[in-house]
Image (tube, rainbow, N blue to C red; front, top):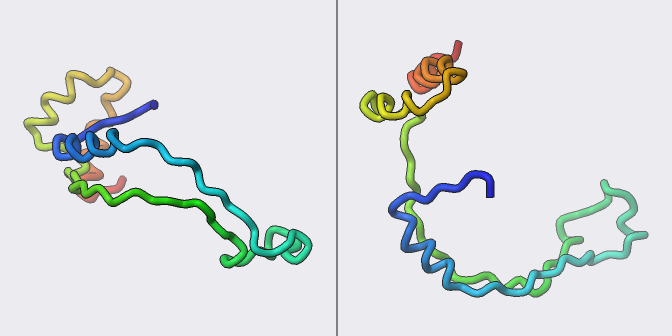
Length: 102
């Protein structure tokens, strides 16, 4: 996994999800013969039949949302961690978060 993060309010729901065992994959079948469908443009929604799909119960998670750019205090903590090649990034993000698109 290249990039993953977990917010504090997601820890318990993710623990619940990890307790669930895997299930067999569903299968996708065509309702009409290939000759009836013709080419790619001949497909209709009802041509696709999903068999064996057994969804598990829903796990509630809050939506963790923050602004595009952190507060000035948070930004001060982040800036030293950026590479020198990122120096133009900070003013650009601040402009975008203020609604200015240069």
